[in-house]
Image (cartoon, rainbow, N blue to C red; front, side, top):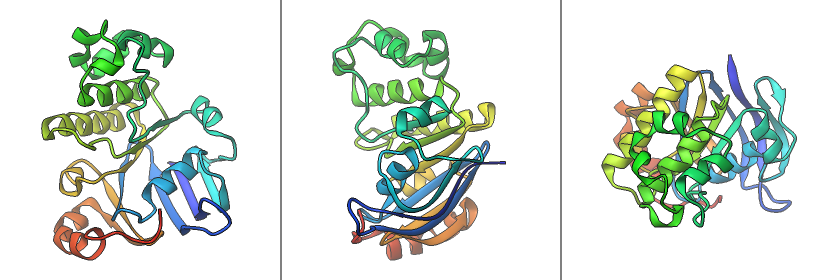
Length: 232
């Protein structure tokens, strides 16, 4: 069953769309990567699916139901959304961040036991990798039907990035969560995803299995990821 179906999505930051007619799906237990150069429309697409940006036209179905409500209502219905800004409350401790997020320490630490020694530390004083673990733990511990993750690896060490990807893969396998992942580390991401969409100038240029993408990764990098596009 598809937990996400996007049909003919047009979205932008005004009347002029920067994402044009996108079709994509994510199934239960599936991890899908959304790739593209800077400005190809990846984050804009995620923001529209999450309800942060209003669609110009098209349809988004989450769990088979039209998603027309704002982000907080979609979150209550089973959507998780981790942005590239590492959305933690920096003035609150790690433990309080989990409480505010509505998850238990036990569930969060099962995902990221590394956070146990940091529970009493304020979110602004832990490392960038720990902040991203905290944000992802808060999202995954709620057992989302669909998780959107935007540039989890931005500015992080390779070992931390691997840790985050493993957590996503395990959540898909164990919880049945569908994951749509925007990622800059293409070759690393391809080790953990099932399928790939490649965006170019706000349109889907390629739709491939992960195996096909790995076989063509050099060509994909050269043709679609090497330079910026005109979309946002």
